[in-house]
Image (cartoon, rainbow, N blue to C red):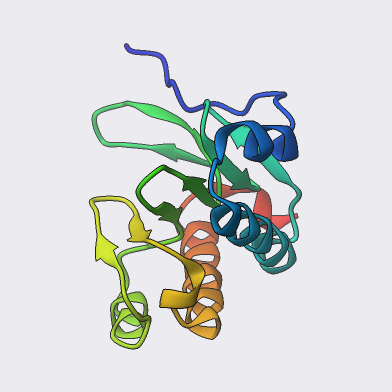
Length: 144
């Protein structure tokens, strides 16, 4: 079975932002996201793979037998836009997205260009909903 590429690393989060992000506003937004997600999750930021900043973790196992660990919440400050790993497919999350602001939906993440494009109070609710969902459906660090 293939080994997961997105695993927690020892890379310093702030060093990553300072070396990877070349746009001042994106650096400010990244630092704001770190502060918010740390507060909402109760976990310190850690690097997952080369470009994802994650908070906490949970263990998943698919029917296929594939399993691994992933962050409860996370984001990546990619060149074109932020990838937000904060979404769980629930009715409540889908309802919250209606008032979220300007974004695009991917398979497993939400894409936003800048924090000013979204409603931060809705972001908090989406993050909380995701943590609750993961806690209910997976082995989760949020149970401690």
